[in-house]
Length: 394
Image 1: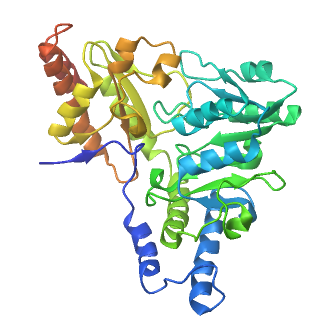
Image 2 (image 1 turned 90 degrees about the vertical axis):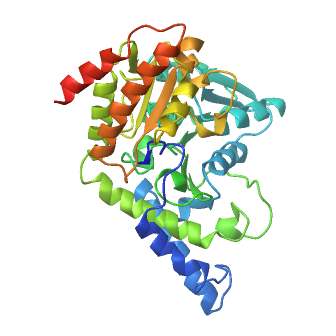
């Protein structure tokens, strides 16, 4: 059976060039990067080269890059490293659970948290952030790109508001890194999180940008690794993989918006399905992500049916798989629980091709029609989309 993977927002395959760069550090060059002998200095050089690559991706100094075990740790380190009991924190209702659950814990520890809303496109209004500021405000944490819809938040405007108020600003850029240009100075953030496995590096590695002078308290206590900001022996193969993946992402990003063109083609054809549409389609988005609703079906049933026919997709964030409640992101956008449950996310990666998009278009249309035939809420026959899609493609 042919298998096509359109769930790259959950995780991406490690690119061959990345795997090749990592391989020596599993065996031949195995030293501890903190050791002063030859073996340690070999791996230290590799870690620092990767740090330079990540710094180039983010437009920051190498000393401002802290390697972590992934995006969740980077988010947690940013939030717990800055906020103190009694502080006020501002975030949004559509953040990843790595941020939302960290903020909920802060509330239990004596912090006050304001959750600013989003509009029907999934966008935060910077004026809401400004209005939420208090004398005790210490941290604003608003994501760059949403993990379910791909919607890009106005982080530069929020960065200016934070700077004017002398409040620290963190942005979760896990779904943006490698897809759009990021520059921490243009954004105006003090902290920024990325994750390797979202940009074709391995799982289990990430990084946090920490602006020089930010008073970050560590979460882990041990050795003086990462300038005493993150204790623990460095994951050298993972860090090398992250460095190589950022280099490839920057080179690929500058060649044109091929991924965006494929996403656009996918959405154009799938929007021909009756009672279907794009969630957040009216907002700026990263090029790889498409969240679409197909009324009168269950999104999880569609994901399962597509998987049985060879197409991998998802109903939303992988960390929320199996959740009973509908997506908090989609309901925060004002969507009904029924439509939120009828939504599916398709996300592309560097390995995907136009031919795979054509495969997906035909398969999704056919599968949606069949599921609607079986549904008591059916809204149309199985042939309607197939005929329209066929005529459009030809």
